[in-house]
Length: 601
Image (cartoon, rainbow, N blue to C red):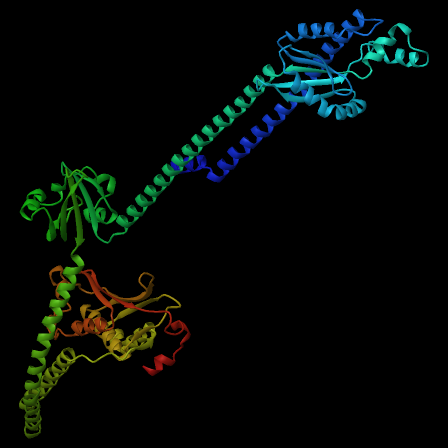
């Protein structure tokens, strides 16, 4: 199934897809978090630089306007208010070391709140500023907009480089700068920058991450759905293929023939058995009209039989020729809507049934004949004894009278011959139950040939033996099969006038396990019309034959579960084949028995 394999290649376990989607979601979440954290660091660094630049600008203005005096706070207030008008600046505050607010912008900002906040944390801010130099933190505004606050000591004189400051520390400060330095010593400046732009960018990044996650979930869900669809299709396809294969195997393994016919009464499908019945290959029979095979109108019969035909006996004439009986069953084939699609025919071979019926009739006929023969033989035997006694009496009384004595001798011989016929008739009418034991058939055949050795030699008949080696033994009645083989050999001997040849063969048949004994001769043969009668009692083609020899052979073989068949052509000789079922469990191969069983015979 190449198609099934292709679908199987597309199939992936559902858990693998779910794990992959979850892994990608985790990767996107971690990556987004790291990007936001990294961006936040960059924003804080940028805001810190911007805040320090603004603070240094304020310090520079204060230093420029008040180089040698304490600064005017109102002037600083105006400077900060001007700077606070910039969109990115939320506010500027300046307070001293005790938390007193000196400058606050924009002007409308609540001073009390700022004073309270700065007073509460001025001590901690002072400590942190001594340790860090600059403090940054996030603060919410009254408008709920977050701000970034930069806090540092207010040092207007911090424009000098560290090296210059180091050198100045070694000498006294310029007296002109002393007032400004003293004023700014405990001052702290706070600059609050708005985060609106950066917050908007951060929200956009988060939204983008959520969007990517949603897209991934949708794609993963779609992939799962697609996989479920493919898996379902593959499972359905595989199940249908298995059902089709199973159905085809069941139909092909049927002992009966099955034929489907379309609406035009042409053959669409048929199984192996049906092709055997029709005597041709399946490809040659498809498309053939069913009326060319059966001499009947099946459609009319279906109407007469109320749409179903059951076990109707017909004779078939396949294209190869010949005729044989079949049992025909037929029914209409319909689709799911009830529309007629054609017919389905079931054919059963009746040849074996007819053969069994013939055997049953023959057995019944022979049983009746046997009962009749037994009664007649009993009635004849009693007067035969008296006739033989009187004949012997006249032989003694007419001693010296050769002609009369000869007549009496003939009477005795004919009475003995008649008595033998009656004995055979009684044996046929009342057969003995076989006493079956494992025996080697080749030894029984050799013994029977030995008994006829003188007759065969006197007539100039040669014997050719062909025994397959290592044959198993068969469970048979030794005496009965000796009689059966003798009868067949005598029949072959009597069929040859003068010299000839008898061939005796023994071989194994594998299926079913059996042994086949074949006795062939070169006699005059049997005419075709008489082949079916040779095993019937009292039928004989010999002038002096009783007609019971082959009937007794047939009876013995059948009582052992075997079968006997005859093949003959007039003037070409005759072959009798006996098939006997065997089993390997009945002892060792007969070749190992030696001559001990032969001596017992």
